[in-house]
Image 1 (cartoon, rainbow, N blue to C red):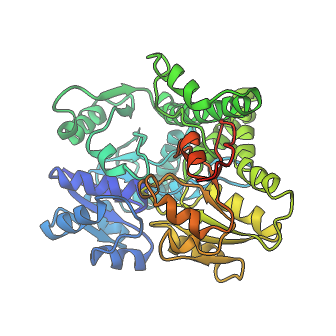
Image 2: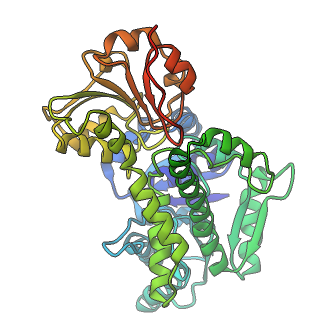
Length: 448
């Protein structure tokens, strides 16, 4: 099938590449000429495991191509994916200007029936707005005989595993009342459901709400576990034992119940805010979602509070080694990352940070530039040299089994603040560390 994808970010680039991988002819369109030129050379703008090789292979095969030519892109695809950003507006609502701009572009150039697919995360009612905008442009062109449909097909990709999620989706949501569109979408996604039927068809508004409901449910689980972790610290319980205890209940499960420093990234924060705004706009007080957001914001400050308390409030002149800058492993994304809240609090208190992340160093440099209180180090070991304590912010696999003897020797104080519960408190105490984690009592220092 001929497919066009507007937008070459996480969603558009991954979805377009995987559709090409199974044999569809895909054109990815973007207004950013520099990005398109780099993609044509096989240089991708994001870090996503497995994506670069797939882009290169499918570009070489001719199944995947990139363009800034909107007319060509619209002419190519019977299916037109809209996968552009929907950043939060000042009031927390989703900014639909880019989605509607793509809708206008398609309407300006289409010469035959087109199926417009909302792949971007958009609030309930967006399909109606897209439909109205397309109809308006077609009327202005005097081409009201041209037919089209607008389908909601939300993405459920996780940064860091987006390729795998796209290749083996848990479910494929299709929101439309048009039977022809349903059949076309079933044909498009047929290669991804050979073992069992994964397609769930529903009305457009339900499909739009499904995406927000899914992300808000996962954000709720994270905030709930962080609330329990705060209780555990104050009650003398171990949140890791609690996690295993409740996770063994199949009604709860183990997914998204790991305590930490709060959620970040491009999805959960803005989607919770957007659904809160949607609720407010219809006069409904979304008490649970507001609590989820408030707990998450506060959770990002908890590690700084422990560091400040440990040093008796005297952080001026201290140097902290920081492992992990991205909001989660296997990505370079630092949007809404807990590391940013922590570093900015440390700098405000007069401390200096020596940081390392396997993938997010360039993004950190882009965000903060050159500043005396930040040193970006080439290795995790280099970040330790002369530091007063180690702070772990992101649970990268390469941090799980470090050289503890080296850490002990390099730090001026053998102290570790672990925001991801990567190590066992008793083991850390035996190695001579003062160890702070999340939802567990701090270990005492034991001489080695």
